[in-house]
Length: 260
Ligand code: COA
Image (cartoon, rainbow, N blue to C red; front, side, top):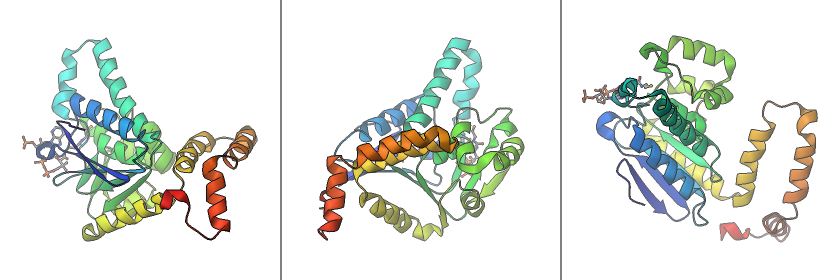
């Protein structure tokens, strides 16, 4: 896969996607949005890819939307503005609903849409010292298309504080509020990411995708409203070849086929 704003590497079952615009701290413009969406969409549907790792080249994970690009939108029609905003929303949704799990490798800074990307990933891990922030209000904007993913991760209380102040905060606080799963010294970042990848590779590929859908369907709903759905999912999944293989491997004291 060849891109102008990304580097994509494949390492066995692991695809690594690097935001690659380091001179602008990986701020994303329309081209990066389109490329990242295409890369994640396609990798997430390949049988030979089991896990995706998303990181940033240079000194920061991602400084959010390219403000030169956003500012230029004043010269666009409302329809053009809606199309560009929709394309950004599509990117975050593509990351969020990716059937392959996405581990974010976060360092340096994750601001605005960059923090939104972190929120849309499944397992973000950050280096200590990373600066986070939903800085949009400080620019006279709002964290609109990222808000569903962020509020799901950090809750309304933290969102009220951080969306309204636009203040910056560091990795330990990001971990405490659930925006990232761990905050580790920068020298331990790669080994921590690889640990998450290893755990994900131990899981059945279809089961991982189904577990992601399960979370989206069940979160924030009444138990009574989701019970039928959960009953149907386990009834279906335990009869699939993957479910049968996983249980058989356990009972036969061997590794399941997806680990060999
Ligand atoms: N959009 C456009 N350009 C950006 C950018 C963004 N979101 N973030 C950084 N840049 C540019 C800077 O203007 C600078 O350009 P220059 O070299 O032409 O002056 C270059 O990237 C490097 O940025 P700089 O601030 O010098 O780097 P730094 O390492 O000291 O700080 C950040 C990095 C990310 C902490 C800082 O750039 C920053 O706070 N960016 C704004 C992030 C933000 O609020 N994003 C929300 C967007 S909704």
